[in-house]
Image (cartoon, rainbow, N blue to C red; front, side):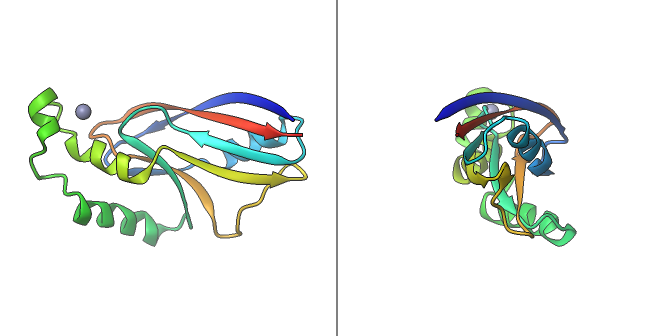
Length: 139
Ligand code: ZN
């Protein structure tokens, strides 16, 4: 088995911006020289998350609405008393979401469903330039 640790960068608008990173990941896997294994996708930072969704316009509204209902952006958070950066809700959302996702691959192709994309959600309250770490394990 081999391990390859790679990365790519994406610009986000923040404010629960949802970005399809499926092609970024599948390009790294298909050029890795590995045929079969699994790929771990991890976002460093405490205000973003990685998961999967059907990347279509309705869900791109439903997901931010869900997070707004569950973890409102207008509420005062203790974190804001600590740093006064106004993004307490961003941290709580990111903790709930989780910072990584793993996908198996075979014959250099990700074993995703047809309507299943890998997404980065940037919960921060400003635009960010995110580096995504990708660790490919396989043979
Ligand atoms: Zn903060």
